[in-house]
Each structure stands twice: as C-alpha cells, then as structure tokens.
Image (cartoon, rainbow, N blue to C red; front, side, top):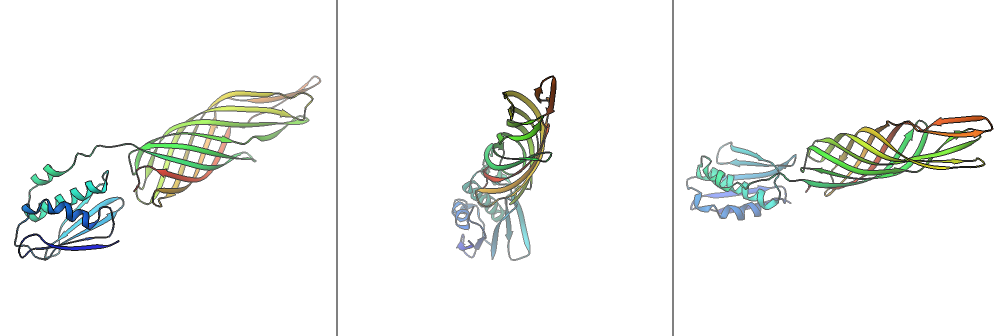
Length: 283
C-alpha cells in the first residue's frame, strides 16, 4: 500500500513522506517525526522523503527543491516501530542541519538476536539404484536474514531391500544431524550451504530364510548439502540436495550349510528434499 502525507511542520515549510511498504508506513514515520518538530528549521520548501524496502533494508531518500540531497540505507531492525523511529530521527536531523548529535542520542541499541526457523520436508533417499521415501524435521538457529547459522534435525527413511543369498535383507537409517552453514541472499530468494555430522540408528532384518534375525546398531557419518528457497510471507518453500557418507562398515550375512554369504550395507546416501520453512525472523 502506498501512503502519501503532507504536514506543515513550520510556517512556509512542507514535508511529504512517501512509502511503498507498510513496515514502517509513512504514517508511523510521521508520528515519530512529530516528536522532533522543534528541531526543524524554516527556510526549506518542497521537502520530500521516500521510504523503500530494498533487499530487507530500509532505504531513505531525502529531497529538497533540488536533486537528491541525502540518502541513507538502514539495516533491518527488530520491529517496525524501531525502524520508524530511526527514519524519523534521520529526517529530523536532516531538516535541522544536525551534525550527528541527534542521531547518536536517538538511535536505539540494537542487540543481535537469534531466530529459530523450523523446516519440514519430504525426502527421497537414493543409495545406488535403491530408493526409499522419508521425512525430515530441522531447526535452524541464526540471526534474521543471511549469514552463518546452526542446524539441528532428524530424518528417517523407510527400509530398502538388497539380495542376500537365497533371500534378502532390509535396512534403513534414522539419524540425528547437527551442523553449521551459511545463508546467502537475505532477500526474497535464499541459498543455504552447510556441512554436518550425523549419528544414526541402523536397522537390519533378513527375509526369506529358515531363520531370520533383526539387528540394530549405531552409525556415524558426515554430510554436506545445498538448499534454495523463495520467501513467501512467513513461509519459504524450498528444495535441497544433500550427500551423506557413513563411516562404519556394516554387513548382513546368511549361511546355507557350510556356505556363508555377506553383503555390505550401502555407505553413501543422496538425499533430495522438498519442504516448507517457517520462521527465521522474516517479516
């Protein structure tokens, strides 16, 4: 929504604030600016202020009766009210010819904060030619926008089969994952890259034999991946590609008479994901 307001701050002085977004709106900035009215000075005509959101930052352009007079880009703050106050402070300082004293007195103390983002995804897991569907749940902890962050999560897969002698064996891994990564493009489009450590519960079970057994074991691994998504309000659909390598060899075996047959459980997983991310401090 576009909002245009005109108010006479002093006699013979007119200020126009124009904004193309609602956070902060022109009305919010004007409300804060009224508290600075005593700092304004007369003698300026046709003063214009334009507010625009660019890549998450608030762009403030200030014009008088000449070409562009002043320009400032503000980083995203914790609330619309804080951004409105900072924008109003800059406008008042510009009107009053301030050398910066007013800005130093009025700028809020912005403390970096950690925002949590929750991701849920469908996972298609491939190990060689074997495919298994699965699901993943993750939490990303980082400052809002781009930059470094930490991931914690869980993922699981349905069992996959491989031939073993005259029968077969089923196997699957369900894992806890933790890692660090970096987010590029803190605007609408976002790209994440990351590396992680994995701790898994390995499940094995035989089938098609006179006697079959079920076995559980722990496995450890490392992984890396990339994710791309587009921010749509408070949610972000995404697609991801991850590769996981498992460090401990695991085998299934079967015996028939004096013959023993073994087969190794695959140690490399390729994971394709599609899901939704919620949170992360986006507005």
